[in-house]
Length: 480
Ligand code: ADP
Ligand code: NG1
Ligand code: MG
Image (tube, rainbow, N blue to C red; front, side, top):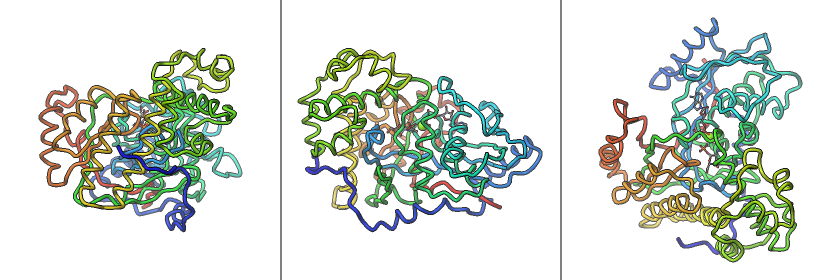
């Protein structure tokens, strides 16, 4: 793909009315009583009342998201392009006087859990759902500005975001919890503050995420996709060209990001690439963690960064010992000062391909935005091509796809304008850009050529796996 010639790292200082909005707290709105959401809330209220023998005092909801472009680059400091989906986590909440968290879920496969709300450990070595709730509580307890200890909370959860599928069910759970705790304690925290607190606290489950999911959960607006930039956090609404629609197709292969070290391995490969390139550029490598920070320091454009990677790194894997030698340090030092706990046993790192993906993907995000803003003829086709290039890069350079995702992307060629994995990958969902007039035909094709062969889809309502999606609203509090 063509590449922009300037570094897009720095934010221009603009009068951004949106950033003023982001300093407001999430809205408090009347709880929905009709439609599908009304039914879910009613069922949740009933579960809550049965479990705790009293009604909830309020509800919160936080949405999942689909990332349109910009995968695995938020943790390198680069801008991403998500929109909130309508699927969400809803919580029914009431305070209790016993200083306990009492947690249950309408889906009984998520076991109930109870602990002292002011004194608990989060064990990242076990992938359990209550860890995400504990993260949200810990985030507000440590950063919410409370004067004293937390009040006990009874919480019941209902979610309809397909879990472990790249639509950010995890962050919806963290963000809903943080909002519930803040509201229960009368803390009016700004949306951007909540987004940043939640990005940090979700890392207690062990994944070193970048902040995209928590940002869009709080900063989304209905009807708009948003470019999210980091350091400082900024959300810009971008109008998508008319005539297109986004279809999400679940590969039905689940990937729980906290259950293995795949995700953190990529974060670490980017970190090691940053350090080796920094050293070669004469910088003190200890000070650089992210490829984005490196780009600022060497004052080069994204295409120039691509060239730099090709000059300095080799496509073969690097052993930990080689990395240590290149940095004039020891593997012990890397273990203790650079690598995360669950990546210390990894012996080989692919630095060249990962860094190439990041710089080219960061560039594609800006290209995608430019095509949207120019709104020229053929814009939809261009966006589709950019999305497909993004998929191929995650498939071949970042190695985070899954055969089922590749199959969905391949099946999309022709009827869709372009498809790509969304979220972290290794399974989960594909998002495809489709001309509105072809959306139904496209979905029928996937139903026939993919889902009819999938045992996991047998007898299930296809709309849970394959759906058109519009940008939905952000997290809010629901009151009666
Ligand atoms: P993603 O964020 O892409 O959906 P993750 O692996 O990051 O995938 O997070 C998935 C985890 O989030 C699940 O394993 C589960 O612990 C939790 N989760 C998701 N949805 C729910 C739900 N409705 N109720 C309870 N926990 C949920
Ligand atoms: P998912 O797959 O939805 O858990 C993860 C990260 C994002 C981002 C994407 C890849 C968290 C909470 N989420 O999303 O920050 O890095 O992968 O682009 O870590
Ligand atoms: Mg997640």
